[in-house]
Length: 458
Image 1 (cartoon, rainbow, N blue to C red):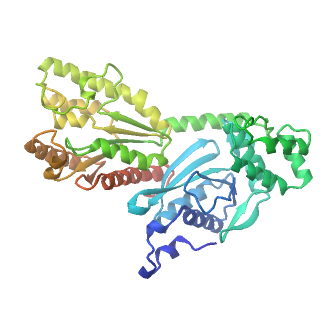
Image 2 (image 1 turned 60 degrees about the horizontal axis):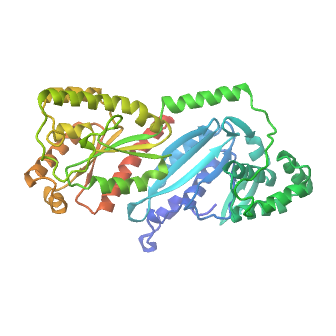
């Protein structure tokens, strides 16, 4: 096995090695070595010729049917020995889980390793290959100094071709991998795989693969795969149970970004979404509230947020009732579905902004009613407050007076200290540095939730 992470991170200062020098390949080989020590049989699936470059795409692995608990224990333990944190686990098939690990790269920007791990290989609830097909005849190989395990050529070709058929396209490079694997198989092996894809002989199968990357066939590989194992009623019930788990215990994250007028929330929001989107299956951005009905003037970007007078008491109460209804129903129809699909929901402003700055939202009703209504508004997983010196904020954008900026800074600090799930980032830094801070607040919270969900210790 290549040099592990603990060796890299404990080199002398003269080597100028830091956590930012750690690559996805270092993280992966450390994980695979730990799996060996934990007696977990695994294989790497797919084309390994791109290794050690893991900057794009994920790494596919197969393990034994009963080894997910051991794998997750390894990934949690890794946090004590390396800069990588397990931030996401997505059960996307009944025996397949998608893992995301993150660590700090250059300038602190998040770097990622994505692992798509299966035992039996299902697609849309249908069993296509078993774990034993992957690891039953696994072979030891050395790749860039690391001892790793790969499946038999038949299993490797079958799995890779299934995925390409499912995606409906194949590149020239992917086609070359298929042809290379096919060329190293015996004639009986080729015939066996050919029959599973509906071809009467190996020669016809080979010709079909050779033509896959041509322009006329690139859009839709057309063979039909025939599994060796049938999907049973038990498999169907397990798939239903998986879908119920996804809804009942969503693994997305609900985040609110708050701060004084002029603190740069929109810019920071855009950058932090870019830095964190790898950890989620989709990002949904919302401003202040879900907006299920007719969009009001509180959705607009305003240059002078205090220009309009407050509404009357009755109209303020009616507007407040509408907001609460919007938050509650919007959570069920917009927010919760995104969370169940492993997405990130991020708000720029939220209900508490109205408590801090009633003039912006033209609220002229009783203060106690504004505070009481908060109990009926869904609570985010995380609040991130952009905190900073009022002079710095005013120097960037004068949306309100200096006195109002000072008041808002103090009010948001007070609110942050009262919330159990609030974090602060220094908004006086450069926007990219603030966005990196916000990104790690999001990833740290996601990691804590993920580890608690799989039964580990934070």
